[in-house]
Image (cartoon, rainbow, N blue to C red):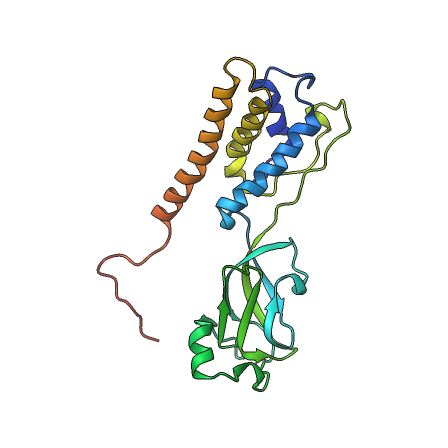
Length: 235
């Protein structure tokens, strides 16, 4: 299911009682919609979770930006397996770079290989990772990453909600969250008027509360090991 940006902007103008978009121009509401999508990704990177085949550069250091992934990556989430046609298709496990550096200081210079065994990641550099052994030019991995939402184009000045084109990038379940953020920004703009500061605070609280509740609900139903289940299975 997709949700059109115009439907969210229309709901915002209805609540703001500004159907002609005089006090809050539609272009302004669209800018806040785009801001809201990016705010969601800051809190919930998995909201724009994408899985793609990444072709590696020769060597140990790899960059998501260099892989020309679409949509544009924001940060790495996980690497699962080898995908190159000439590879073993084996699983790839995350390890500590500090341990590998201590045990094999010269590992960056060993012979490149199409089969990657391990990867190393530092959250302070979210679009960069290292692979062991260093990758050959033919190496490919299945990469899970968080993507940057695509902005909705701003309509011309004086437009109504009907002029807004395109669908939101985040899943449909975040439509109400986007609306809450737009209303927070709208009332915050007019916070000098009686009651609007409180309205802005209330909508921002709903925005944050919905994101917090959604992650709790997601974790509650996520596949996981249950008490009494075996820790491993036979092959």
